Image (tube, rainbow, N blue to C red; front, side, top):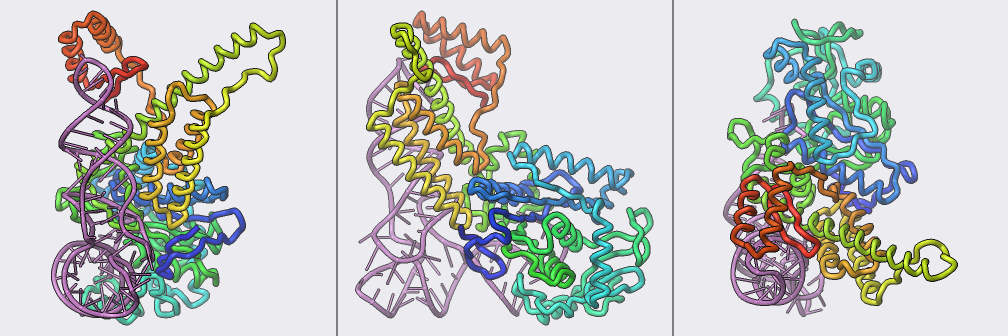
Length: 490
RNA sequence: GGCGACAUAGCCAAGUGGUAAGGCAGAGGUCUGCAACACCUUCAUCACCAGUUCAAAUCUGGUUGUCGCCUCCA
């Protein structure tokens, strides 16, 4: 398995710190609002990474935090005139609901920054003791130049950084020894949430949270640290400086970063009016479509989002789901048929041996299964190469085609079962929910469908079509298949 | 100004040395009362220029263009 490591800027063979285990930390959202589709990309991508590791037999300890103390949360709380804790709790719930709809598995642990203050104070004290941090009137700064490897992840030259910084130095930073130093602890301002510390009341800086939570839940050294590419600098760079200075060990072996999501080729921003929350998308699409769309490109490539592309993703995903639906039906029919046959055979013979007897596969089926196995290898090869989900999806589409051609009602149930198992296994890795949600139709609609069937029987096609159009207006699309009428909501 | 990424068909997107996966859309056909589904057929020489090589989308140099980071940001 190869993973592209931002640190080395190359693909490296994955070797876990501990055999059979993966320790993985993904930077989570700051909960000051509902998440947008850009937030969703790393969640989807790294959830898929996790699923693939699990498929490969690894025991994955997956940690994703919620940053629940931050300027933006406080600002929002003041606007609404409520406690900032209420704000963060509200959006954590919303975020979890969105993640569930995106079929993102729950993290092994998802710590909250505000629950880990003690650990942060401990690490900051430790950094001060070691000379990597200093207290200036209640604000604690990290002494950036003291850490030798600073800039090693983002490949930045510390002197260039300083040159850039001079022109944009912010007011209130006069107490810093060096403009490059960043905040570990900031003193309380009126109306802000605060905790007691050796440097007075205050709250932690953003970067220290992740260092502390990663250490607590995964240990001093972890396998994978992941997040959006915009976090490379300064967030991850600072985490490295904190953790490695405090722990004296390499922080993370592999650094994974997903590319940005653009809207109509522009960066998503509120001012451009091209800002979409996950909930916006959910109004029009099943969020599975969004997930499928995001996995259709490599996670490190920039990805463009548009209405047309979502339509294309929806159509593609439908093709997969339709085929699986058919496959499942055929499997049931085939099983029933074999059961019938066994019952008859059983009635004729005195002894029924070993329960139901399955039909054995035909030569053609064996060949098809062989082809399916090859496609499975193609899928794994793609995923082994830095999680190439686009190639993986291509393999799934080929499997779908194979199923559409070979898996018929008359096929043996062993064959159909095997095809089903194979394809759904790979869908599972991608996080595609393979069974459409069972929906109950209203009585009115049921009756209309029945009426139309009668009209068809009587060859009154004008009436049949009229009813079909009527249902279409109601959002129900019908199709007549060999197994009867099927419908779906559009 | 510093650092970096990318440029493949109408659209999306794989492919890092041997002559272009897959999907969406389109066209033609089979099936179906019609439609939908499905299947078959069809649709590119890889931004440009120069070079290395028996052989390049794939390596090297240059040109043009797009984008990102350097500041809160997934």
